[in-house]
Image (cartoon, rainbow, N blue to C red; front, side, top):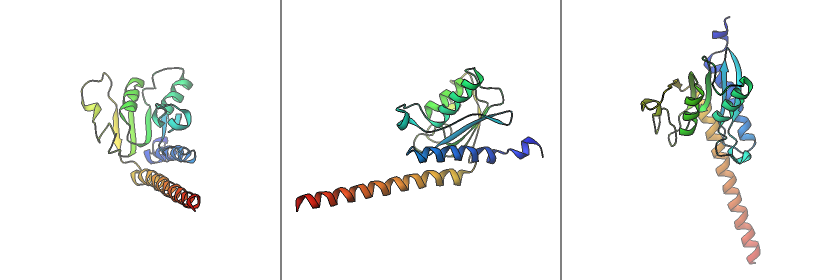
Length: 174
């Protein structure tokens, strides 16, 4: 079995989903990303803007930083592919252009802030000196389910907190 058939887009996206699970464990929105070159992960990351107090700490940026640090180069290799569980935002698309990524594969679309196919189609603007290939929908159901489960849990937690607050206020008024 060749490396191309052994390591499919689905295989690599599953690795990105594992990164997303790490984000959820620390209370971050579960988005995960990996960068693959020569059939090896050269960078990985998950959303961490809250825990790192860094609004730029998106999964894609974390993966780019790790890859570039390990390569000691601000540009990614010619064959680099980013696998990310959610469609990149404007900031991340810009970073991917600057890093010279070859290809992006994403799972779920981001209807509110997606910048490849959803709200904005930035690569079609003609502004950039580098344009990368992209594919959407890899393990889309799994990626979407991961996000939906997280937000459902968050809504339930908020509901419980409101209930506890009401109970506390009722106890104090008696």
